[in-house]
Structures are given as C-alpha cells and as structure tokens.
Length: 101
Image 1: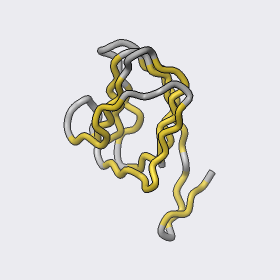
Image 2 (image 1 turned 120 degrees about the horizontal axis):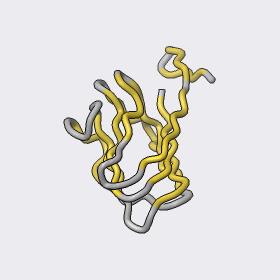
Image 3 (image 1 turned 30 degrees about the vertical axis):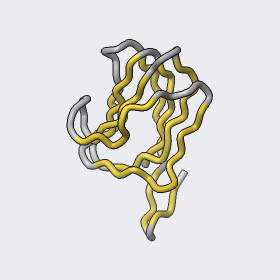
Image 4 (image 1 turned 60 degrees about the horizontal axis):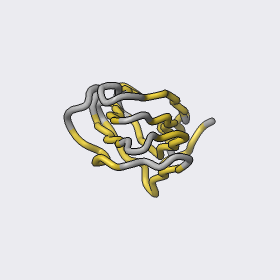
C-alpha cells in the first residue's frame, strides 16, 4: 500500500509483535519514520506503554507512559515523527500492532 504525503509517495508498513513482562520491550523500526497509531488487541490488568524516538528505552520520549485498553485503536490525527528509531517500552503484557511509514 502506498501513501501520498505532501507530494511524496511512501510505503505503509504494519509491524506486529507480542510484548510481555516488565523487561521485555520492542524495537519496531530503526531510522526515520512516522508513527500513525497503535492498535492494542490484548492488555493485562495494569500494563503501560512508553514510546521512544530511539533504538532502546531511552532518549527522546514521543508518547509518555500510558495505560492501554484491550481492543483499542490509538490513532493520531497527525503522524508522530521519529528520527533514530521507534521503540515501545512496556510493562505487563501487551499485544499491539503499530502502524507507521
């Protein structure tokens, strides 16, 4: 699927991953991109997600820690830009799909 954005054509990617435990997190993408949303299909009783512009759970925070709900789509009105990478740090158990390009 291609997306037109300000006259530029980009490919749209879906990245899926199961993330669990307080020390397990996910590097979704290395390099520049735009985060469009996060779909949470499953969440434990008190999980959290923090999104970083990084390849690790440090550096610039794009989305401060929030508590996701099961079967909820968190779509952003404007894409969230990242330069270094897209890293999701979690606690608890979260199954999520990230939409980025």
